Every structure is written in structure tokens, then in C-alpha cells.
Image 1 (tube, rainbow, N blue to C red):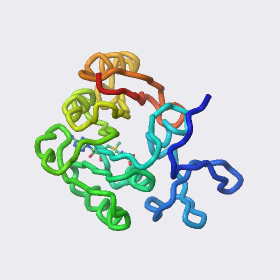
Image 2 (image 1 turned 120 degrees about the vertical axis):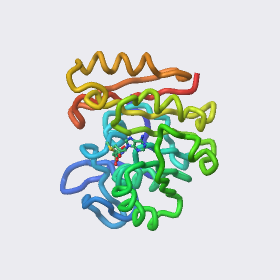
Image 3 (image 1 turned 90 degrees about the horizontal axis):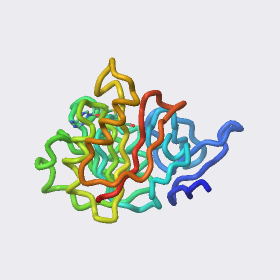
Image 4 (image 1 turned 180 degrees about the vertical axis):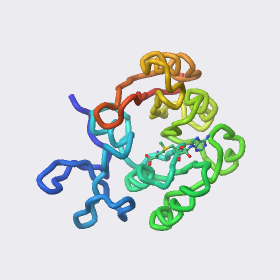
Length: 209
Ligand code: SAM
């Protein structure tokens, strides 16, 4: 059975096609209808996880630490249905674009920080229900390990491993196995490749061990 979508996320018809949607200010040119805007699974790995029916454990209203926010495509949808949402991004340019997205959402808090250095934002971020990670950088498991400290005992890690960010030449399956082996302090509940939305990306749902 497909898990329920979180409260605040719906499947709605846009131009005769059923799409995921949240309610909020548009951010990236996505189609809108009234207050609803399409959550484009082809541009969002978390959107693809929901579209593929993964059991993310999200129900709506959770506190979230989001690592790799970029200019806010996905984290804007998260803030539309979640509670306090801390958005970590280390590149100044996308963070600048994230600011107006956050201005339109009072529960979204951008942090210009390096996710490999959680001690630099530990004074700001409260324990959270959900850790979302989409950093597309080498050492993706290690980033999740270092940020495990923020996750409540009954929380969830929703992470995406991009194979080519670890090793462009290696077989993606081997890269995924190595990344899962390198996760420490988590029990993996589910993994799913994000094809056809995102090639050579593995989505992982895990909980603190
Ligand atoms: N999650 C975004 C979305 O769906 O809208 C896309 C994220 S993009 C694939 C990866 C982002 O992670 C980039 O913006 C990159 O600058 C950021 N990133 C990579 N390593 C990081 C780190 N150590 N700390 C913070 N951000 C990082």
C-alpha cells in the first residue's frame, strides 16, 4: 500500500495530469493553480521519493534540518508543509536566492554554513524530527553521520546519494553499497533508486540506531 502523503501535500490535477503540490508562493517557475503549486519530482529528489511511494514517515508539521538547500527548490516545498525548517547551504550565490524564498515563509531559516561542520550551527538548530540531505558532494554518508546529533531518537533521515559525486568512474551500485556501509548510527529502513526522475541517485530512509 502506498503511504499517505504528509498533510499539506496533495496529488492534484494540473493541465490534465496528476502532480504533487503544496500551498505556498511559487519559487522556480512551477505551474500554479490558486494557492497550490506543483512540486516537480523531476527537479526535487524528495519530491521524487514521495512520487515513488517511499515511506518517508513525514506527516506534516515536523521540524526539519535540510542540508544542501541550494536556492530553495525543494526546501520551499518542505517549509510549505513542515514546521521550523533550517536550510543549510554553503555556496553564497544560491543562499542569496534562498533569502526571498524564506522571506515568504516565516518557518524557513537559511543558514550559510558547511554541512560538514555542524558545530558551526549547533547553537542555532534545535533537535529535529527530520534530517533531509541532498548535498551532492563527496562523503555524503559522513555528512549524514556528523549531523546525526540533531536528529531526535524517533526521527528520520531522508538522504539522497548521488553516485557521480562520490566517484564518476565507479559503478553506481558499488558507490551506493559503500555509502550505506559508511552510515554510522543509523538503521536503514528503505532504499530506492530515483529513476526515472534522477538517474544514478539512491534515496535512503533511515532512523537513529
Ligand atoms: N536540495 C536542492 C533542491 O532540491 O532544491 C538541490 C541541492 S544540489 C543537488 C546540492 C547543493 O548542496 C548545492 O547547492 C551545493 O552547494 C550544496 N552543498 C554541497 N556540499 C555542501 C556542504 N558541505 N555544506 C552545505 N551545502 C553543500
